[in-house]
Length: 210
Image 1 (cartoon, rainbow, N blue to C red):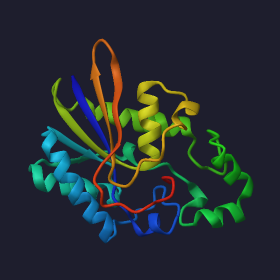
Image 2 (image 1 turned 180 degrees about the vertical axis):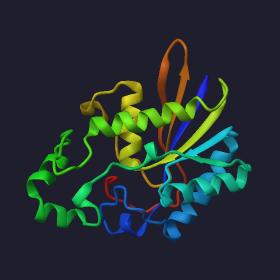
Image 3 (image 1 turned 120 degrees about the vertical axis):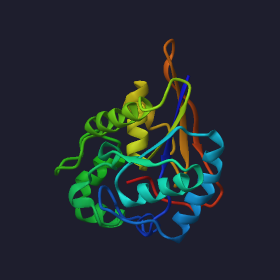
Image 4 (image 1 turned 135 degrees about the vertical axis):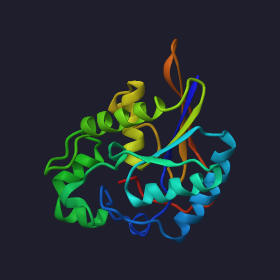
């Protein structure tokens, strides 16, 4: 049974400011780096055979904390990047709500298509699921692979992988910084979620992942 750990990156200043990151390459802050180290100490106990990461810095630097403990090299896959939020990127959610109320209302309602060149949930799910599946195929059957990605990307990619509709995915709370989801795969059951939002205690409240 192959085990896939889908790990969200640590905290950033933009997380703290409720600012939309999307595919903007924002680095970890001091809290995020501490979270990465704390989480890596727990994940190292799972004896991963491989680490794969989004190529954005906040995910790559989170993965590097685990690589330092395990001696594994990190492979990078741009398919694991966060959702592309187009003109929202760099704005706070309050600014989005004021400047783009119709789009913000669609996002709040969980609609798959927001508009204005923002990546659709379907496209995001397919892209990230392809990256997750490819990562799982890099390790032998029965081994563990850790994939470092982003909040919205993780939830939608996992949903696509296990075949959940958007409505069901909305019942899951946002993945906290440096927390992860554990999935397993075998020939009989396919992909199954074993645990969700697991992680260290070095936390403070953050907004929904964007």
